[in-house]
Amino acid sequence: MLMKSCIILLSLLIIVIFPASASYAGDKPLTTVLHDVHPGGVEFTLGNSKYSGEMKSNDTYTVDFEVVVPAGASIRYVRAYTYWVWSKNGLEGIYPVMNASVIHRGVVSPVSHDSRYTDTKGFAARYDFFSGTDVYDLSDRIHENGTYSISLQNSANDERTFCLQGIGLLIIYEYQDSPVIEYWVNEGCDMIYAEHGITPEMATTTTYFKGDVNTEKVSRAYLITASPSGGLTQGAKQTRNKLYFNEKAEVTPILGDIIKILFGSGKVWKDIYMTSESAQIAIDEREVTNYLKTKDNFASIQDSGDYMLVTNAIMVLEFEDEDGANAKKTTGFELLMGIIAMSIAYVAGKR
Image (cartoon, rainbow, N blue to C red; front, side):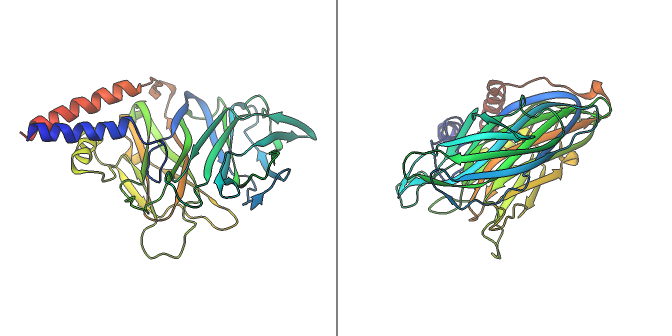
């Protein structure tokens, strides 16, 4: 019995550590790219984003943003996210080629993406086209209040096309008169869809905000998540999607019990991602203060037949004073060692 339990546990750990390259399952967890502490604020906006429709060679797409931070504040980080889907050449999935620029006060500044995250359905079938998130670091381009436009052009020299669902703009500013904040910025592209043999439990992606938190000093905690296509399939009677915060999403009895032992219970919300044909990106911001843990908080997003991309998860903590913030990083290795230790204890307890 012990040997069988160990084999099952090892298989689960392999799934967690070495996910598949691409599929409708939650196999491409978001990556933490920023984790910092300072007085200030966090803003995330889609500007006047709308669905582009099919963009052919030389077609352009522009989104306008109004950047407004308090007088005397300094803009610390700016990241732009372009959400693209249906990238193809005929019936062949292919990556898009696009030129990007930032326009401010009539000045056009070309920019290049810093990161590209992609995913596909992951099996041979019609319409297995690429979707993705291109990320642009605009910290040196946007540094004052005003109107900014981000323009994208299909610069392919062939017949490839793609569609843009919109552009997200993340602005993090420092301001001495604001509360001290600690934040984690997680980004990527995980395509999840509970269809074609993928269960809702498999169509679940989990992202971690690693590190210690002095919960007694936190006055407010909130979570911002973005999901292109989330809730676009509307009118269904059953639940389409769920958001978990510090709450296990049932995967298997063993792994679920391990997560419960490690993290305890949190909160789950249903059908919070809802979009429309014109605005195909669902943005959710919600308070999570009452469900905060002292270490390694996490969020999971689950699809139940909706089809959605998970691209952004930002957790922000506000503190009563600067001494309450703790920006100590926790490595993935430390988290893995904790999971393995609790796993061994769990299996031993079942003997």
